[in-house]
Length: 256
Image (cartoon, rainbow, N blue to C red):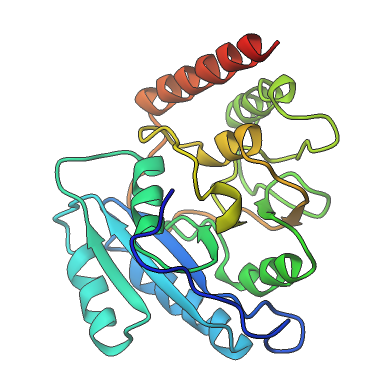
């Protein structure tokens, strides 16, 4: 995951008392999220502004053509910490995340959804966990104190099964409760030289399995409800997840 600009360096132990001074590069992938992205960006900026941390928000839009890019561009025009990157002819959440990270010089890399299901107010607590020495901090739907909202029984069962399938892949002593979360922060140095699958929706799992992580933390949150737009959970997404599991299990067997 080489950066396309020089990496930012820390200059003092913490900022705002207990927050890291390293720059945060937060990627928000979008595809037809015009009804949500303005609210999400306002929430993220409102949450990060009081912390004093250096940050940038990179919205990676997969050529939505629904007004998403125009809304982000308007906000970026008045706040240079918001940046718009439009990908054309490509799809896939993991690829969009990696595209954004490559265009940031931040030493702390993050991702969150644009559909309001990930609360921006959790970011300061996640950053404090990074300052406390974690290499990877996960906004967790399954850590004690979390809630998944109004999921129907079928969705609950499917989610539980998907998580259960990851357990043999995770290293003992490093297992987390929500390895499929789409809301997390990671230190750039942990993944700098790694190459990940471009297509798919579960980049966190690949990081957990392949990256040399020393310490993780899970921060519970209440999984919100989408305000507008359509869910990205489709049969294709399920197939891509199955493909990722197959590749990771095959690599595990090769390692013995």
